Length: 375
Image 1: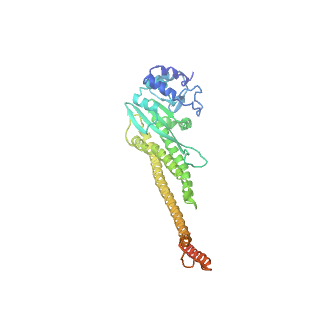
Image 2: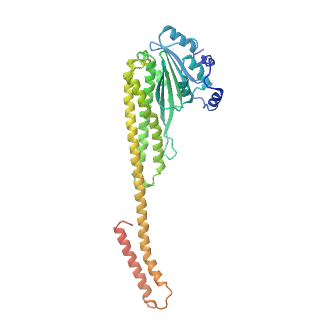
Image 3: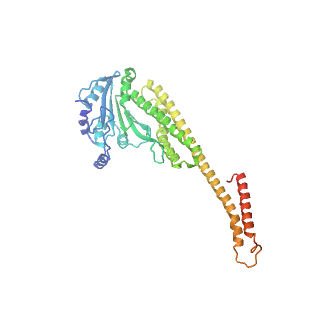
């Protein structure tokens, strides 16, 4: 029987939180994610559980508890346990096995955390926000552009526990990439932490490139011939989605800086140089997001200016036509008064003269407004 299948023994070791919280988390549990081939179709939160020694995968023998005991007895290698949206009950035994802090366990189960790095004794707890670009045919006021998830990493001297939330950001390809480079994986659990951070930041850059295409399209539409007719909801929606991306990217700067510069016992010194490289990539992502934010503000201001100009043009046209119509209205109003003695009232050519005066006056006003580009 595989390690992933025998984790039921571990979950019987204890519980975290009350029965009320367990019931609430169980009710809101989403459908099973089958994106990874190792995922159990029965709904278990375990994605994979592997022991590594000298950078190579060790064949599974026994359950998780035995694997951890073997690693700690030999003093070599580490265990990598991958979970997807575990419940409080499922995570209870694992937390006791690896002596994880209750606050970190609660964050890992509840999710919806900001990117951060915390130390609990000999264990490091890191939270990463994952992002995914949502494909759409046309950006509308209701289009979802950026979908976010989370990856939590518990890092110890001989174990790595990754907890993933969301239907994207699978770590299966990441695990395969690490296994293809045993020399790097042999450096210890901190290599996995670096790989996760690098994977998350690379996704940031990929999503940013896709968001830039949407921004370019909106910019083109706004500055087109009829840019004032663009739905401003598209611009606001893009700004909201960019804000969601910003919330995932910007707070990660401090944790990566700490991993790259401060000595941490469970992080190998050789790995810190790689964290500096990831920090540089994150800085690039933050700069691009800041530039996008300013660009969207400029696009929105330009669109509002176009709308104002279009409204002013409409008002000038309305004013010009009102002035032209005022001429016959005034003349006809004067001759519509019920007086017996009025000049030209009984003149044979009075009607033709009035019509001619009205026509000439309206024509002169029309030409004047056309020259001033009011019409």
